[in-house]
Image (cartoon, rainbow, N blue to C red):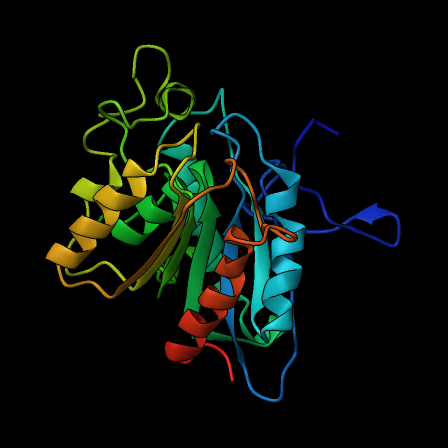
Length: 270
């Protein structure tokens, strides 16, 4: 198994569904809850600088969402050497896939969100702010007919801007390539893409994050506020980058309870 790649194991074997028709390696792994009525769902996008996928930001997060009564789907999306827009196409396909298979997993297709960490937070933000069709070249199937835009986004210590001093150089290089042949960094900076179409956002960061500066979250929060997009933002005074659920952290570990309240306020949990 490639180092750092998210895989869920059930009964000793690798579980999950192919995201695309054929033999591609992108997979989506469901963690359903099967409540009395269809549940809200969240597609989980682990971080890893668009170079790998962090295991602790995948399955453990899905299981935490399950405790809230939310169905979760962990996505193994393409990373380097694949470039933009391939990760975005994978994320869009994942949201469409969840909506297309909602009945099979006890999900309400009208309540499908995204939750991403670090570079996965950037990917979640790209998806939440994209206004284009987000369709790969054909042929297309019934999944592609579904809506790809999420109904809300949870961004955890996200990469937001791809320009300036606050940019995470590793994510930029992995997503766009050494010559930035994968796209325009400014056009892929989330704070520049926010608009009235952007869904509600919950975002958190730590003030002393040495890998992805907190300026990323501050830029995003300002942009969301200017466009009057509902936003809840938390900046904790201390904590290393990549905390995941931050279990055991006496300060940043508060984020999961705050996020649970946010989800409840949006009608996503009981």
